[in-house]
Length: 601
Image 1 (cartoon, one colour):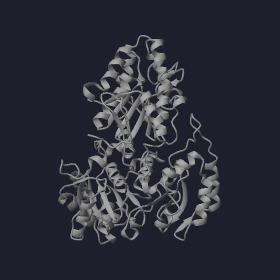
Image 2 (spheres, one colour):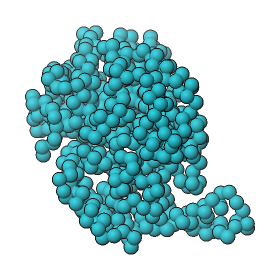
Image 3 (spheres, helix red, strand yellow):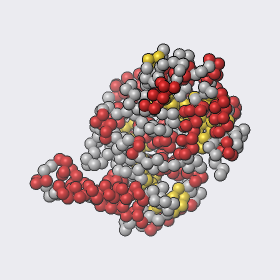
Image 4 (cartoon, helix red, strand yellow):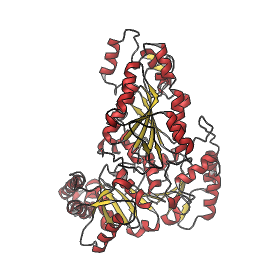
């Protein structure tokens, strides 16, 4: 099937490889000192100095590919193989087999080598070589195995950013590159190896591996070279594969717009803060203005550059954001955003006013009284995917955060950044939903704009029939989002049940905060309500995973009933656009994002 793409590698084997905008990534695998520099794990393992020199020589073509990917605006991921200090994530087979089979040396994983402990995180040899040092807005993935998907959140990293097509380079071809390539293929990604950017320690096996990548008419994927990628990048406009939604291109507070200005040096954080101070309205309560300007100066003084002298800035650098009053100034999520360079401007009683002088507003739940029709878009996170520490929640069981932004894409950038950040304590970490608790939904390489989505329209006595027509037109009109309507009975009934059960939320509070003898709700009633809500949530999730007639998303009107159900379920993510709510089950966050982005295009 043809994929919409502004760029294509026509010389790829066995066929041309498309590079769709906003959906293409480069994964650089394990270009660590331990593997490609002298005195590291790789040289110790390699049987030949000549072969090792060839592996070390991969740094140059990998750098050429990295520069091309940066110019085009691809998502970039750098992986590092290694283990925690106590080696608790390293299976005995990995150490014992090497120790028993290797006759050339007696060093194995975890033991002290010339560049520190071999393949242990934090050691000098574990880090990526200087020439390929990641930028602050690029992803670094630490993995314990040969495949990059095993025991990592790589799948979530990629789908959170909308990626469907991946280029691969790095070491070693026969081990970590091949393992990751095969895993990615199983996950549904379109894969293309840069054959001159991979190598290993056995020429015969490396040659066979390179042939395998595109064998059987592309059974696993495609193959091309760094030269072809570089040539395509040279002919293309800078940022061609990045996505800036048309209506956000001229918005001075859109994240990508701000980021590009900061990198180019055409905008300073101080001038941005001064502009906000001068134009903020009554609906915005700014933090201490003197401190804001001091923080802006510190950010402006950041002189970090990459290997080519380009400013090296985090994805949220200099991005102004606000919260509603239930967020403490010391809330963990605020601290997490500040750690990525974002600038906390203060609180707001009017998100509309705040978005006129900022990039994001964080709140706890969307209500019709603060309808996103006033804004551009909103995204309610899956329950427990982000920290709610330091936030006053409406009930102890509510733990979702809503991001109000200028576009779904901006909300996506923020969420995909925050969902990976470490939390402050083990106690807090225990409350955050681990990525393994979210189901892996296969990737559709065609993208939502080509493949479309299966949708169900919420039906209840409070929803007018005209809403059904509105939604159907959204999916059948000239909109880029194609859709196939599927039955809504099961998902609608469980959604409505969640809203009704949420009316019993005070029973949960009763159990946690008060004695049953002093209230009208018994502990047993509370337990029954909690069990019923848990069962309803499970049924809701199941409705999204029951075959070809199950929906990718439920489409509903923005109402008290709908927002109450979202908050009660917590297992779903929701995107709001012009008073229409796209709801998806746990793990389907990326599909909701895909649809939301396309709807806005």
